[in-house]
Image 1 (cartoon, helix red, strand yellow):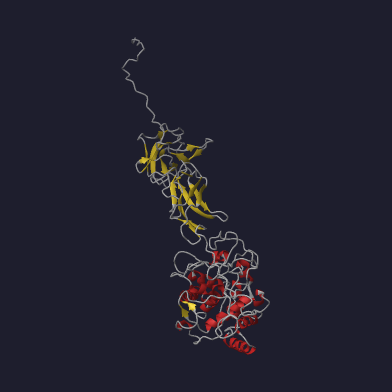
Image 2 (cartoon, helix red, strand yellow):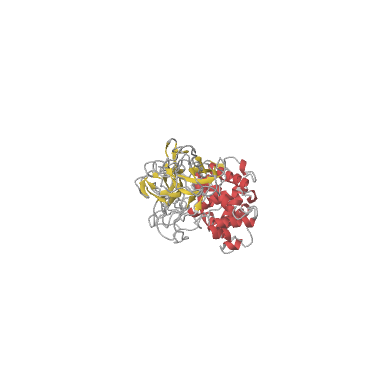
Length: 586
């Protein structure tokens, strides 16, 4: 903290006495409400503050250790300690918090208090981090929904003066498809946002540029690993998990302590931008940090803060003109054509009967980095599976380009003949393609009715085969049901619920008796002629049940009995036998 004090005093102190008075005032106004955990001043090493390695190992720092602002709180203590929620909109802009930003912090505190009450998250901690990361969203420059009027982007984390973090989002959030950048008022890097992003304003999107979404995400992130933020050591661990720098911890602690003693609400867009970044890029060029290039401060001197002139030339004048403030460089905005996301555009359940066309067609929507529909994006749709299903035209893969509304719809799917499940995959984008996968099902052909095609009695003698074949026809909604699977089973009861192990039977490929067949299918006319049926030595009336895919069934009677014996025809003894000559009696 001594380094911060010296930096601030160099900006405004003109004498040793003034500097001493400033130090005394600072010491009186900025003592933290909770002391730093033991060892937290240890040479910038987060582990010195007891940082838990679980967070670091899993996510690293939320910001990727991006630069932050080191400006310290005002030297004047707020007028009403302990009543910050009720203070009027008065006071300096530097000390106040823009209305939407303050509302987002308090909403996040209330939400987390409901879902994770043991964390005891204070909104003032979110305010402190928001101040250090983005100057409260650049002084509250947000729209009515709480979204920043332009994206807040940190420098490219390209390893040159910063951490090296290669692109993880295809530029969807930060507009950079090569390296990641910290994004939004709470400065999340894309990979961390992918895990912790929230939709706190109920618009259906998790937007790191929205202060409500970002504040809730920051709250949940700080509460990770079962932390209790009312405990100093846990609070230090939480802050260090956000940016792994002890200097960062001290700066956040200063603002946290300040906001705990009171603050006030100011209108959106009227806040003061911070001026002192923690780290400047070692490479020359325009700034890409969280705000524009800082403006120079007036030189110490007379009241009024006018710049001091340089050494005079003979005859008056200055050896060099007063330096002009550098022109601010605007933060880069992701171009509208940057591909952001691929989402389902309303595709319903994909289900069809074998051989039929699917009613639903696969449809996706592409959006740009700002969430708007993106046109002219090629989308590749691919069918994967062994059901024989293809797109219209007999293709397994097709390419469709999104229209003005960002949607691309694949051709109709034609179900194959094999029942089962398959997938349709939609892929779009290069570098880090976006992929959507849809599950689909082909069901077997069905019949809702099945009946014999004739009424002839089915009769066989014991040990013989039935002389008349069984022929049936299946229909579905009164139309021919072709290709429908049929199961034939010998049963005992009239309802066909109990299988029979005696009486008529079929033969398998080896000639052995079987009483159930499951490989039968109706032909193109919906007709099925059963294989030959044989009778064993048991006489009686037996039943054959035929069932179809779809639940239709019919029970057919089979009769086994011996043929009736015919008695020899009797002759009249008085009647002469043909061919015989009678001999007269002697």
